[in-house]
Amino acid sequence: QLQLVESGGAVVQPGGSLRLSCAGSGFTFDTYPLGWFRQAPGKDREGLSCISSKDGTTHYADSLKGRFTISRDNAKDTVYLQMNSLKPEDTAVYYCAALDLSESCKSDNYRVYYWGQGTQVTVSS
Figure: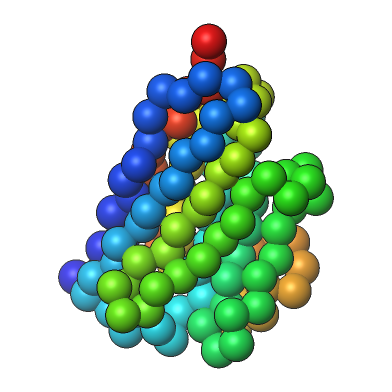
């Protein structure tokens, strides 16, 4: 059974950093592109970043302006999202996802195959 389990969500002060982790199981982790998304209260879920399976190509939403970094460790079946210079508007539930096998991570609108359950990030003083 395919599973994606996020962890690392917390309450953090503005300007702080946080690293989210997402552990996969039940599928061949290293063959799938992976992505991170978030959904703030009252807003649509938005794609943040994608990392390919083949060559580690990464893509980021323009709105992040270099503050977030996605990475993956296939030996640990885990994908990470390092978040720096956090702002109150980053407050949201953050989701990881296994993406469609054809996803190239070269443009927006990442195609999701399977969602994780989400982890809450709150940025507040």
